[in-house]
Image 1 (cartoon, one colour):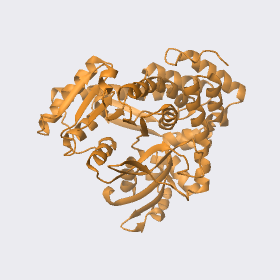
Image 2 (tube, rainbow, N blue to C red; image 1 turned 180 degrees about the horizontal axis):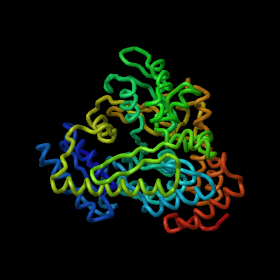
Image 3 (tube, rainbow, N blue to C red; image 1 turned 45 degrees about the vertical axis):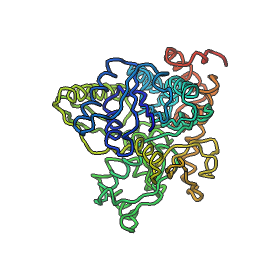
Image 4 (cartoon, rainbow, N blue to C red; image 1 turned 60 degrees about the vertical axis):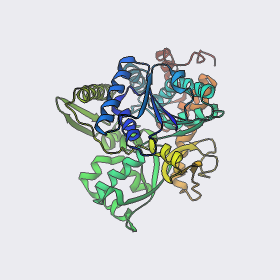
Length: 453
């Protein structure tokens, strides 16, 4: 028997994956799933969705609790999954618009760059509450964090954890598998890969199908305009560095100094727009980094999610009753049932990838069984890929250090170390931008971040 807690369960579109996986697991029949959210209405929707899924899956007797009280939710927990979003769309707008005014144009802005670093400060303010509460009411429990910025959060939480075991979960590796299987015309479940690096800039070090190396075929796709156009940045990294990165081009263009520092490069590599019809919503995913377009995409995505929740609740939208590809419940199953499972997880490095900093967070294959989670060492990680990842880890370590210390100077240094920011701005400009972001996001930033530097 285990107590499993979803913190942020009111985001039904994502949380229903974990509810479904919980209900479908033969190894979790005696466990309890606790849904927690600070919004009562959203939490009530999550409860309804759980009961609807339980009815459709013919398992109405599964134990479920729901509460808006964090301490009540976490008391006695064995596994805690954090899946919430901090702040509002207006805070995201600030994180896009201020950097863009200085020439640093972000498209996602949730992991690196000025937007990602300040999102880390906003998010960690809430994640620290979860961690500190866990240390009090469920010491020794496992925290499985899905919240971005993944690397910054993993480092900061790991530094502050005492008994709680911290792991970061992302689905970029699973997504990579399905995408490359489609490009290479092989069944996704037969595509074999070995990936490692830093979250969102890990690399498929090996890629094969039934023993056949797929990299020669993947390199040929660089010359296929229809496929190359979909992920220009990923294919350019493949062209020049020999390996395909795990995360999409929008993300990757923000982590490197090559693609977004000049308007001509933005137009060449990032001027990609997808028009995605969704019933009565037609929205665009724009990689060029215009703040208005990025915010509009987020706004329309929120509208779509709320619409889908309403359709689930009134029965006009059917649930996908297959197990999700998220690792969360599979990890818990493997531990409780002593069943061997492999997943790429984000953990502190401490020599796992020797040519990356010891205090960085790395994304490596992990073996999971009844004794816990066992990260694998990557002793021969290619040095030129490590050089790309080291460009990220310096900023991530400094941002996490700042989140723990409450010092603005640490955050300035993180921005100065960020590859894209450093490629565009002078130190004085970075300092000025940093101050404006602190002032504009003051209601979301920990009170320790006064003008103490």
